[in-house]
Image (cartoon, rainbow, N blue to C red; front, side):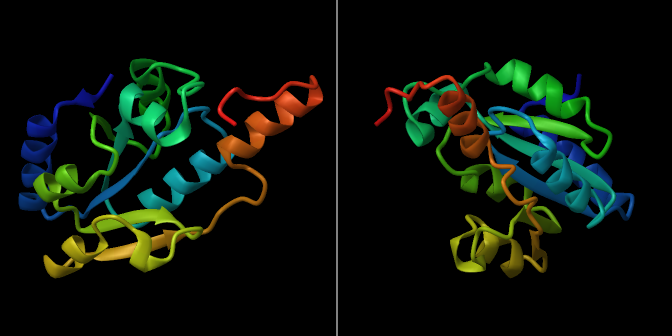
Length: 163
């Protein structure tokens, strides 16, 4: 598995840049891997040569999504993501946003879903200030993790305890 530390990812990014490759970055909780995620990873990979995925740690997912999440521990989420063809490497970060990671990696292309306005994408200004660009990938309708969880719960007449 290609689960890298931040330092390893920064070193690899430098090597890829020296080789003339375009470094692409996307991030998220990816709590329940689904076809919408795969679609985003495929689009991200089309933006360059080397795709690194920033993955929120278990603690940051819980802070962002509520006490019932994550559904899977970070190491398992990383293993699944890394097994996908478009993904080259995965880095777990513990902050609520990937800004500190982006400061160290400074990718050529930052990819997020089109559900984010460019002004809402953490790190967009940083990447652009370093000569990179931001790509907002098209989403697959109805394929968000929260939507899938809600459908499963509704099918069983359950609710979350997150409110």
